[in-house]
Image 1 (cartoon, one colour):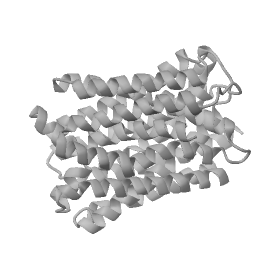
Image 2 (cartoon, helix red, strand yellow):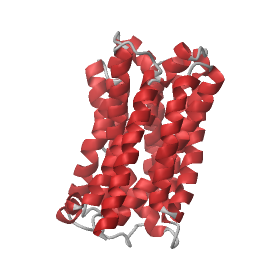
Image 3 (cartoon, helix red, strand yellow):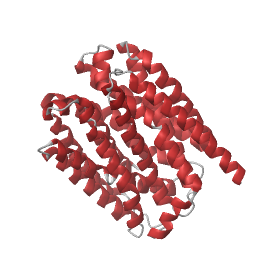
Length: 378
């Protein structure tokens, strides 16, 4: 479990550290911050493309070998980020770095659920996702601080080192996973014919975008709106990560008691918190509390969505589990893009929270429809 979570730690660090370093990347390449946000979207789109392709094409590959291969590819993508000479090549490197993301979490989550005791699948999935949450407490603030003081490229050097360590840990500590069912590409692609799979993915793609709309531009929001010194921004990133840990653990516990109920609770909480962040962002203390709560509500949603997809996907669980992270990164790309759009329109750095609250409301409505359709079919 720790080896699997270490991979999540590396992935979480590289996914979110870019958001904390957007001002530095923008200055380095002499572009605007909304334009620099394309690096965030490129990583997210890499996840969207890579998750279904890898999960389907590698359906016959032994699970442990696949996990190791995915982390090798992840490490190489981050080395490319360190060496990128232009912003265009940086965007390409971020896209490549994102390709293994969804498949890794999908396979790792299924491995955890397979090994978990009866009635504790969601907790096991949350344990793997915990690596991503811890990344936002330790990895992202640490790498952000390093990037601000030594140069943004050094943050990705740290990520590459984590990737190498994960490859070694997976090889040494993860069992052969022979009990996991090996399928085939056509069986996995069958998940795309199941309405409940597609609707649940859409809920994540829309509803989760609110968190990313705020978090993508959190560094400038804290300095320009809340009036916080830039040196304290890593502390806010750590608070966001602590919120993710609390939300991740709480979401896993709630999902084991009732998957659909846990999703409703997390999404309604997200609506309220994002709407409140519009006002909270004007004070450094309330903005910091708001960042914690945004992270908590977002992370609480993930275990429920992941477990629900495993329930409704039948024999196509690998693709469905991987597509969950593709959906969440569609939310990442859409949230970053929409947040940048309203900022570029001159509406200010609190406007992304308004966009986020509207996305979360849309997610609640769509999930209500999803549950009603499932009950009617049953």
